[in-house]
Image (cartoon, rainbow, N blue to C red; front, side, top):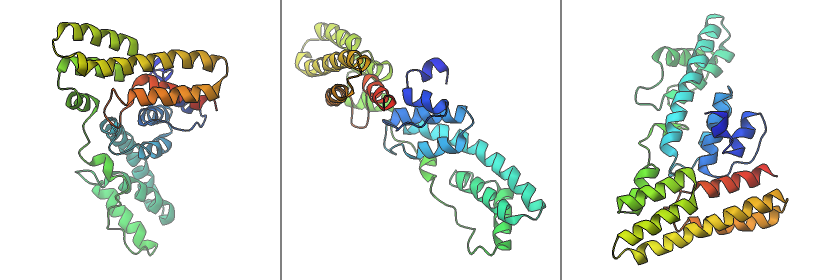
Length: 260
């Protein structure tokens, strides 16, 4: 993830620099986890990925990122495991073997057979009762993911043109542009006035709150910003399926968290 992209996510940018800020939306948590792993903080990234709601719209992307990071951590842990088993330091070996196994054993291919064998060997030397069961803490990242943003929006809006506009709003956060596009679309489609009017009004409401939010935040009026965020989130919920938040709402939440 580039610095320019990270700049869109204050939480991710701060974490990449080593600061600890409270996570907000699932999208922010994912961006922050990606920033952490890019800066070599894979274990912290994994824990942040664990905080993402399993049924969120970004779970598929979170799972893919987890599997990439977990594989890298497991390879390093497995290498350390082998070295300490060879040295007869079974306490350290067991810890690193366990890390490699727990990260990868829920996958379809399972943990590396050699590392799993060393894990059992080290556990036996230390008198560990059971090292044959696969820990399932990370199993969610290997399960079939829930529908992604595009699928959810398409199910919410059967008209593909409407769905495309709303998905663009979710991804890039231009509520004013999205509402203008829907107005043009409404003018071309007979019988769609009532269906689209509520969505258009909600998008315009988000845009108004977003503009006011930026102005008030620059003036240091955080209490008023919190109220605008709440109102924007309520309007946004009328546009997007449950579990999704448009980019402006995510950005507002991230900026407000960064100000604490």
